[in-house]
Amino acid sequence: MESKSLNEYQTFQNKTTIEPLEGRWEFLYNQNKINKIKKEQYRKEQHEKRLQKELEECTFTPKKISHFQLRTDLEEKNNKSYNNIDNLLGRQKNLLEKRNLELERIRQEKNEKDSKECSFKPIMVK
Image (cartoon, rainbow, N blue to C red):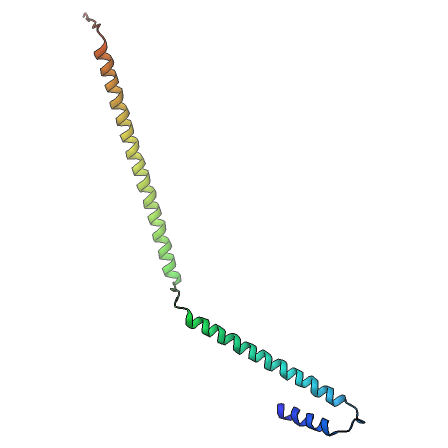
């Protein structure tokens, strides 16, 4: 296509100025189209080269996960969270039991201390 356009251009140069220049405008229009296409191709090539260069610099490759593997991972996480909740509830129960035992021990000690300080001891008759 370029050689045809080049030949047309050369024939236009050889013509006299008396002839109409309509064909020359078509030639320039076609040349403009060709130049735009070349620029676009060059731009795409340069863009691809830049991307390729960037990819060569990258060392990270993502780990691909299948749908099945993703499901099993989610199920494991859910099971762990339920186990954590059970574990947390068990720990809370143990702490409450310890606290209640400690409070009961403190009450008993206080009662014993109060009863030791008391000098009056009633005698109970049957």
